[in-house]
Every structure is written in structure tokens, then in C-alpha cells.
Image (cartoon, rainbow, N blue to C red; front, side, top):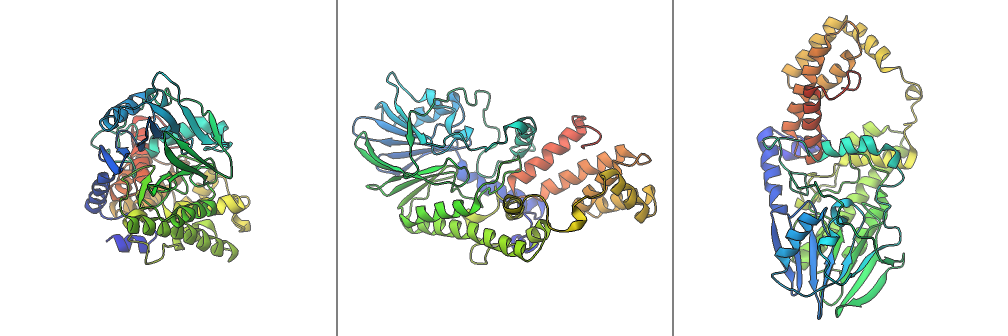
Length: 443
């Protein structure tokens, strides 16, 4: 069943399989403190991301601080069972809020050094002007307003995290890591900081050469990577992401600590995972570029690109979080912009005019409505959605029926999704439609 869905370039299976897969992925972020190796501990599941503690001679080093002070305090309390030494340094692997918002709950009487890249803060690019709509889409992607019955997880993180104090514990970096990186010793622990653009432009990974421990940040976690986030992001440089992961693999870590999901505590598995991850990203990029240069549209390429056969069933490359089709469209737009090269798409019809033409082709609005209802009855949910979007523009259409069909089709698609962001977005949007939160035009 999973193989068949991937042949079609989708992340949809039968509802029971989708739920079983998501429930199995839940094990990747069950709340626990993992002893990575001697004096290295990672707290998983205390919020969406991981936080780690490295125990040195006269202090500890914290890598990432979760989203807010409350979750950070709970994680630190759990890790304090292994050391009560003062915090000598905090490291931000990148500037996403779920990694930096709880720092003040992890400091003591003496303020520690706080390390980040020189470009720290550039995670979201230059698109702050669209923050209002990004916030709405963020809520949908992560299912923040879903009921307990609708929630599963977020692909690489648990659902239902406590976010009311998000960002309230953030502390500004005091030590900026230059582009060429940094080697230093903190509390007797040798560390290497490697600037490594990937999920964000300001990302870095941390290497403990004497312990062979690698802190990957969000450039690696156990899911196909989120090369594009449907909440809306600036272009994530996919080629650099692949190269950064390749550099991590070249270190041959014995222990791999991701930004989310469980650490990998075996050298062969860790190196294989990083090598495969880098190859998978590069393969999607290369296939997309070939499609672009063949003159194909982003939608066509998105339906054609596949992970290589030897990678598609790797547990850390299943599309629980990122999606290959989403990545393809992002790469296309990032390299060429919105225009697909087909003059037909230079000046498309207004959606209302297109809807009128579709109704004419169907034999009238009533026939188009019947086709929409037939698609829903046949569980052709995507087609039902597309037809409902045409009908919403027609003055003589039953718009309440179109809305009802769209809600049911969204929930039908959600039930078949093992990609958590897609599933959460479908369900969240359906709920907003049902509550009347969305406008008549944009439902």
C-alpha cells in the first residue's frame, strides 16, 4: 500500500494505514531523556524540538532551548538528574522559535555565553510583510487548534505542545560564530561549530571530536526533510542543505543528535542516515532541474520526481514531515520564479470567468454541481475540492452545498494522509470553513 502511494507521487494511503504509520512515528518523540554517550544527554518530547546537555569538568553546555521557559524548565529538570553544575554556555543551532525561546529558564546566577552564527535571525528570510497570513497557515500546518480526537502529531514533533509562553525566554546571542566556523573549549569540552546552511540560512552543526557526537540541528531528523513548509517560507537552498548534510556524514559520527526525533546511537546507522539524507535531497534537486530544463511545468515535475528505489523505504526518509512534491515546486519557484514558461499561464482567466467556462463545458451549473457530488461519492476527494472551488464563484450555484462538499472532501483527504502537515492543514481548514471563519471568496 505504501509503495503504491509513492508510485503515484502522493503521501496518501488507506485511513487505517495512515493512522498506524503516524502512531508508529510517535515513538520518535516520546518524552524521555536519552543518554547519548558519557556526559551527553538529550531531552526528547518535552516540546516540539530537542534540547541537549553536555556535562563538562566545571559546568554544562546546553544545545537549543525549546520554545518557551516552561518546557525548557521541565526538560532541564529532567536532565539535572545527571548533573547540577552551572550552565557555562548555550548554543542555538539556528533561529527557529522552537529552539531558542526557553533560554532564560536554563541559566543560573551567572549569565553564560550564548553561541549562534553571524547570520542568526535570518531563518524566515525577508518575508515578514506576510506574517499575518503565515501565522494562520502555521496554525493549520501544526494543527494547533485541532481537537484531541483530530490530533495525531506534527511529523517530527508531538501535537498539543504548550505554546503560551513561546519566545518569552529568548536571550540574545553573545558570541557570533563566523562563516569559517569556530573551534573552542568550554568547561573542558572541545567543541567545533560548523556553519551549515540548510533548513535555515543561519544553521550550524556542533561536533564533539573527542566523543564523536554530532548535533545536527534541523538539517537532519527522522523524516524526509521539510524542504518547503506549507505555512509559507522563503526559498530554502536545497543544494546547500544537501552539501551541509554531506559534510556531517564525512565526520563519521558515532552518535547523531537531530533537532527533532530520537538520537541515533550507532555509527554505521548514523553515517548511513546522513549519507542517504544528503543523496535524497540532491536527487530531488537534480531531478527537478532536469525537468525544468526539459521545459516541464512544476506541477508535471512534482508528479514525476521520485526518491531513488534504494532510499524510498528508509525510515528516516518517509514523508512524515517534508514532501517530495512540495519540494519540487519550491525548487522550481526558487530557481525560476512563478512563471512555468507556458504562455497559456502568463495571463490566466479570472477565477470567476474560468468557473463560468467550466460550468458551460459541464452543461450548466447544475451539471457541474452533480459532477462535484459524484466525485465526493466516489471518494475522488481532490477532484471534488477543485470542482467546489469553481462553484463558489458562480452566482447561480448552491454555495452552501459547495462549502459542505469541500469540508467533507478535506476530511476525506486528511484521513488518508500520513504526511502530518498535509493532514493537519486539511483538517484545520475544514474546521475553519465549518465555523464560518473564512470568507465566501477564499473558502
